[in-house]
Amino acid sequence: MVKTTERTAANLPLWVRGDTNAFFGFGVNVLVNVLTLTALCLGVVKLSSGDVFGTILPALGIALVAGNIYYTVLARRLARRENRTDVTALPYGPSVPHMFIVIFVIMLPIYLRTQDARQAWQAGVAWAFIIGVIVLIGAFVGPYIRRYAPRAALLGTLAGISITFISMNPAGQMWRMAWIALPVLALLLIGLLTDVRLPGNIPIGLAALLLGTAIGWIGGAMSVPDVSAAAGDIALGLPSLQLGLLFDGLSEMAPLLATAIPLGVYNFTEGMTNVESAATAGDNYNLRSVLLADGAGAVIGSALGSPFPPAVYVGHPGWKAAGGRSGYSMATGVVIAVLCFLGMFGLLATIFPTAAIVPILLYIGLLIGAQAFQATPRVHAAAVVAALIPNIAAWATGQMDNVLAAAGTTAAEVGDPTLAGAGVVYDGLLVLGQGAILAGLVLGAVVVFIIDKRFTRAAIFAAVGSVLSFIGLIHGERIEWNANGQVALGYLFVAVVCGLFALAKIPPREPDPEERELDRQHGGPAAAAPTPAPPVHRTGEPEPSAPPGSEGTAGSEATAGSEATTRGR
Image 1 (cartoon, rainbow, N blue to C red):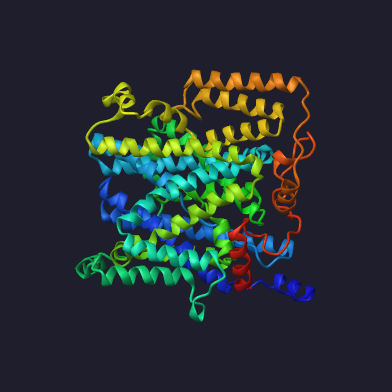
Image 2: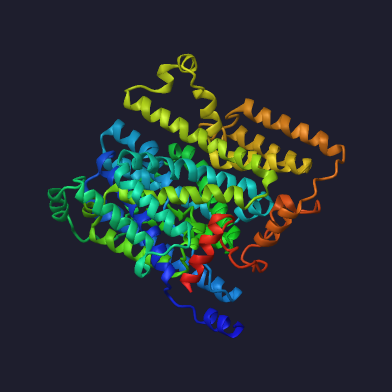
């Protein structure tokens, strides 16, 4: 038995059955996002179809195919180093939050002010370039943050992104056409969260997409004339350097820094939490290698004319549970790139109902939200919730802003007293949600260390929160000196309170047997270390061996992960 495993690990197949499942799930995920950003470019910023299909999408295609091949190579290297056959490649695609931010925060205001779509485009390209540079810098800072941040804070803030920005919009789209979406979601849940197989081992992602498409066409939700019109717009587009566009945008760089700096920090923090999520699921990647690739992808894409920075996605445990290994990532990058080069996204939007596609995003949201609680000690549940809250606030204020904009007004015009009179605490939620990823990480870490009675560490994280608030990286609308002094003062007072308790030399809380088991399975969360010495989270090193089925997250996902792993082999 050992010899067979060694031979398999030394000669890894490029494709296993589980890759088919993960490819249709993850491929559909990326497909949805590219369809969305295409519609935003055409419908919001009013870029020409020639610019979108001839330059932006081919540039994005190059970044995606290069990135996904890179992560396939990393997965196979990790599998050989650890002599395993169940390593899953990290998923990689256009960053979803940045997709909306670059359109609505960077490009749209410039377009509305100048009525010049090209000027808006060049600003977006310059912004993406700055994001990439910041992530490259973060590659040398992020590993230290990951080493000392507790798992509950990392996974909690990741769950906050997943539940809000990744899940809520798809959920809303689903319930607009629930008669299409809900059967698709049910099929996905049955196939990915249980050990039930479809007849003939049909990949569940493909079956779900075909089911929703069939229901949509039979029910009259789709239109043949729309398909015919979109087919006439297909044209070959190959990437080319757009350095003039990039340099023109960088000439007006200063206004872009206010959002690019915190969002660049967001990018490497999100990458850090996604690497932690993968480690929790059993695949321990080197964080620096991941962040360097993400930063390089954004820089290369911007040089070719894409304003959409790519990044490692939330969802690695989901694709691992679906049986994906290394092949699904490369296949997704190649297929999406080909579709970008051929300008096929206009046609695809008329063939597949959106309601048949978006349930996969809700599935990922369910999985990551569950993981935050299942892969952390129960005693740290309050810390997970604390890390969630800033992301919920950011999502809520974004929804309020969109509603007010649709009504032709803003929160400033309506006024805080009027909003407060209607029971809406807009000003407080706005402050809470600024820099939500970092804010969630800080809050979650403080709560974890207070629960564990490690008051010195709690004081350190609170002091860091004070500094970040003071310069506007969290809880501030822009990067500036004294961006939000009252919040900075609040964190400083927390540091003082925790520091006073630290002086009392109170013994730290000892981990219970459940925590020790999680520590054994997942490499040792920082907060559960039994001694006060600084924990070392090993990046790129083999994890301790885990029992069968533990490569997924706990609970029902572990069952699905074990079954999917068996199929993948």
